[in-house]
Image (cartoon, rainbow, N blue to C red; front, side, top):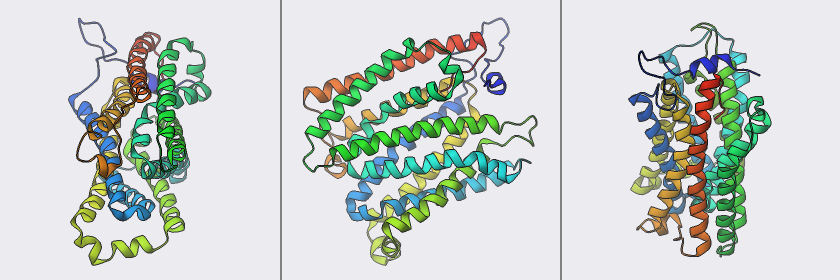
Length: 362
């Protein structure tokens, strides 16, 4: 299956009297600004939610996720009205929005569960998403199957080794018996996130039209995707937690507690900001570099944030432990090495992609 429209979109712009540089061309300051916001909002959200859970609100975690998605859906709906609606039939948009919407629901559910059990395990498992993306791309993308796999093996092996070492350390050092459960939820979340990335990219390609009116914008795709997610999160919250969280949030005592009110409002605003900046990034970038940086810098930033917060006053609030034994240190080094090798390998392959005028699936 070929994607000529995506190939043309990813072609480097022609600059007179200067050779095209596929690794640096087509990147605007706006796109990089959106990239920073996507990474920032995405990394800050989970420790913020973890602080809210440990503040005595762990039994309303699924309800908070439902509230976040509902507000994000409403916000994207307003953006959709402001940017215009395509002429494609609604059922066709919904049909291609259902798979990524379902996977987003799984990501939210599993990340909420993993974050509640252990924020540290969840954050340090972020690089393992590269493994799942590589596996699913090999299984689902014909272009990837035609490529040799040996250039990708060094980052995959290093990331896998780091994940295994940190998993063993987390399980052996867990006194509450949640180590295996937290790691299992975190890894399932990363797998669902990789599938969401694959399905969302396919939806964007399929809904690319031949004219402006026929093309479904990324704002509209994001709206339908979030609508599907909200329709799944809300009944799931009622089934798992009932009406008790809603009564608690409707009480004056909840809003009288300044910390609870600020943390809940913060999660809503961060989720809306993340969705807005994600849409902005997809509207702005014309180079695979932004997608590559997002998929590598976000895990790297999450790991760095854990190390910084583990030696701060927020250590007890987030339930973090400092990596002191050799297994932790070697595991973190392997994860960082895997991310750096992934950047180098993707950069090398991107040069071949532009030369062959084909697209590498990120």
